[in-house]
Figure 1 (cartoon, rainbow, N blue to C red):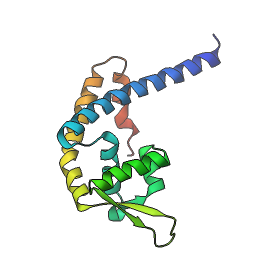
Figure 2 (cartoon, rainbow, N blue to C red):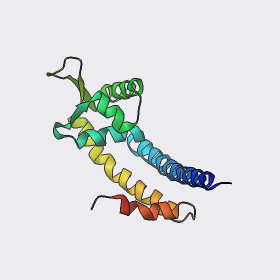
Figure 3 (spheres, rainbow, N blue to C red):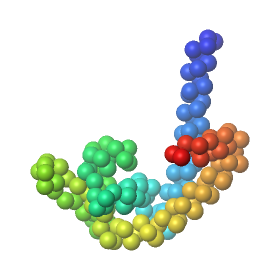
Length: 148
C-alpha cells in the first residue's frame, strides 16, 4: 500500500466516522421530533433556517441548498409545510420567476415548541456518541469548529 493509498483510506475512514455520527444524531432527532411535534428533521431544519432569515423568508433555491434537497424534493417539502400552514410562498417582486418561502406565525410557534426537544435530543445524542470510542474524537472536536 502506498502513501497515497493510506491518505485515501484515512479520508475514507474520516468520512465513515462523520456519516456514522450524523446517522446516529439524525435518527434520534427524527424519533423525538416526530413523536413530540409531528415534524421530520428536514421539516424542523426548514422552520429553523427560515426563522434565522431577516423577515423569515428565503428563495426556494436557497432553501434547497440549506436543506441539501433537490429542487423537486424542496418543492414537495414546501408543499407539505404550506398545507400545514407552517409557511407560505410569496412571489418575488424583483423577479417574477422567483418564489420566496416565508415562515408563518404558526410555523414560528411550532418551532418555538419543538426547539427544546431538538436541543435536548441533540445533546443526548452527542453524549451517547461521546461514549463510543470510534465517535468520541469527532464529538470532542466539534466545539473547535465553531467560529470564535
